[in-house]
Image (cartoon, rainbow, N blue to C red):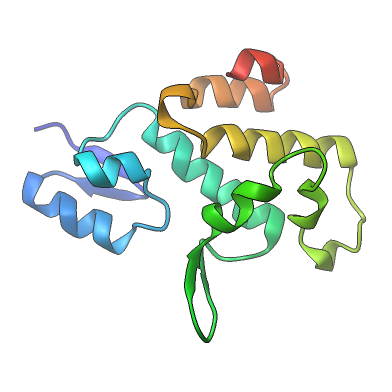
Length: 138
């Protein structure tokens, strides 16, 4: 079996897959968890979670006294042009390039979006290097 990279861990043996997914589930593509299949687009989901952590200053799993919420689930309704500023870490005190933040929010939204519409990492890198527009990323 091919070793596959999953959130910094190699999955060499099939029986280890569920252990690795269980311990790293905050970054794992939900489709990957349900199908036990890694795809070329699974990395994009993990990358999107990491971008959301950087934008929001929050961890991938948000624990409160009464609940546990995945950052992606919390952020998803805010990843639109009208409300994305609510995503941004308040400790930045609005001192950031709005255009760059918009690009990062859009990139995160595409990365954690539906797996069939999620781009490969090669496209995401080209988008981040400004070789692709947002429309080309879809």
